[in-house]
Image (cartoon, rainbow, N blue to C red; front, side, top):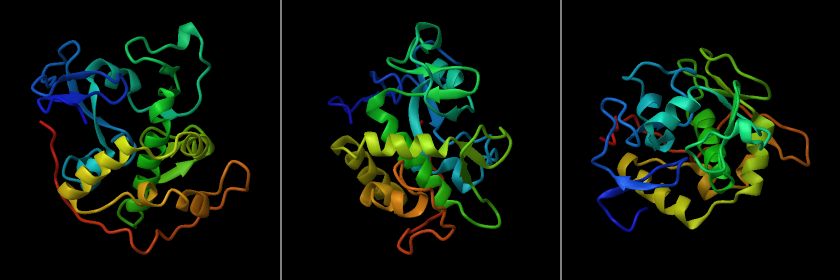
Length: 213
């Protein structure tokens, strides 16, 4: 949360800019709404609850958002030709997006939430251990996300943002409140992966529409 209430902190770039600088026409260094779980992976319709779920939305530099596109998340070799350029310590290639270490766990817990929250006949989002299909309701790479969750634990910034999201949307990301549930559901990097289809019983849900603009 920025010290200046008139500003917004960009997720991947980690820069504070005026929240009035919304990229309505792809202006350079302005921001737009970033779907951490890309909307093309299962919910392209703006009327869908997943499309407007505040837990999945982050403010991002517009050109960085374009660079991320609908790529899967995975480790990318940290060499100069893979550097994203605008986002510090962020690497990318034609298939994968590898954000800075400070938000790797944040990204993983967002995606764990989405795969758990949207588990129904209507919309069944799945995390997979491979490159996903861009038009399919799936995203990778699960093993890497588990590793990122373990390496980058929940911090106070993530907790504060989570409380704000809960105050608005009235449901919670259980993997911020209970990080240990990740290993209980998906396993850990030191134990076999275990997939449990049934979400935790106290994962409250609520349909809503949300806009940061």
